[in-house]
Every structure is written in structure tokens, then in C-alpha cells.
Image 1 (cartoon, rainbow, N blue to C red):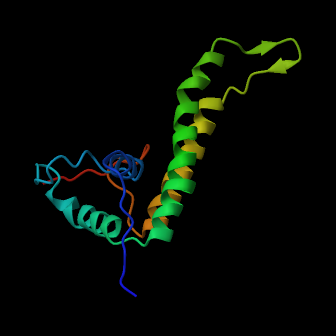
Image 2: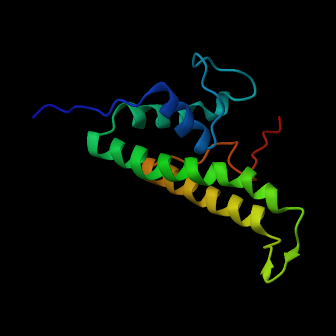
Length: 131
């Protein structure tokens, strides 16, 4: 039986890349200071072009669906930043941090599922190249 790869939309590809911590792909040209990450980027692109239909469905239906909901919830948590306590309800002072951590946890799960390292723009992690 011939292999049929999953065909992600361009929007899904952009979301997958950014959730995994990789900068915008553009036309794929190498731009300083990023040539050193091209191996990881190419591994990600290879995975995305050679994913089975079943694997692609997991990425879209499980990871992207949940990541979209989690990402939207982070800025919405800002609505509660002005309230410390209201009657019986007490605001979680760590709500934004907790939501960020949950979002990053799901982003890391996506990268692990894809079998690639997280990119240089992943959450609070930063990688510096000193020459």
C-alpha cells in the first residue's frame, strides 16, 4: 500500500513551528544568526512532510486544538489581574504563570511527539550563540 502523507494547511504549519519554538520560516533562507539551527528546522520540516494521516490527525486534533485553547486563555487571564479577592472567590495570583506553564508543557509534548528538539524561541528558554 503506498504511503500517503498528511497534508497540513499553511496556517497549521505556521502554528506547529511557532508552538515548537521555531522562528518564522519565510522562504526557508538561512538568516544570521540562525544557520546553526537549520539542522533542527530541517528535521521538523521533514517530519511535517512525511507524517502519516493518522499522525497528522493527532497533531491537529489533539495538540493544535488544545494549544489554541490554552494560548487564548493566557491573555484572557489578564482580566483577573486587578482582583485579589472578591467575596468568597479568591484570585489565583499565579494564574498567568500557571497558564504559561501548562501551555509550555503542551508545546513540549507536541515537539516530543514530532521527535524534534524545541526551538530557540521556546517559552522562557533561550539559547545564545557567542562567537
